[in-house]
Image 1 (cartoon, rainbow, N blue to C red):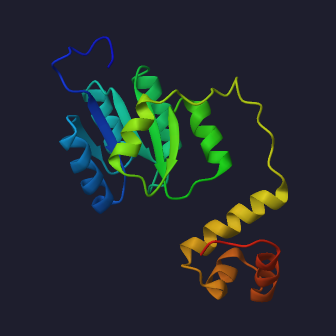
Image 2 (cartoon, rainbow, N blue to C red):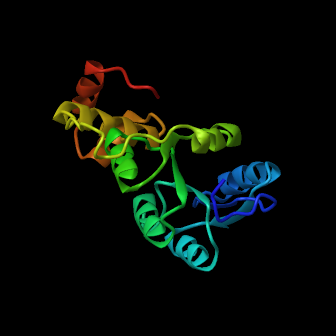
Image 3 (cartoon, helix red, strand yellow):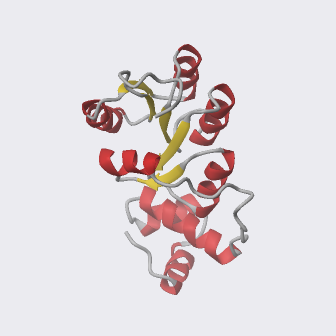
Length: 184
């Protein structure tokens, strides 16, 4: 609990997610656990709410139309430096996790995550800051693999469609997929 928050007042939590169904479901579960919940569907709504209310904690989706979650984190930390932020995304990658932590996020979780797991992440030891991390640049092969996996997930495992999105021949993609197993 933050120092400025009286003990009888619930913590204010901002949930930023463009997926209305997920936002409503997660928001209801969080509100049931005693938080004063505010929700936003995008960067603009989130910044408007943060400018009006004292936000103690925030859960920010990474991928949204317009400005992404990394911009929300950066601007939310500038506006509310004491705000603890958890990034919640269905499109996790090492690069975005490191960037989110570097910007000031408390933790980085991938979907699906339930309310208990997310709220427990706020109480866990914070991840190391960028100064504490010895970041090893991922290899080109690893970055390519993560990108192919993400596109393949977005295409629901359809190799032909993924190959079109990636701008490569289907057989080339099949060759690359044979090099490493992809969860579909």
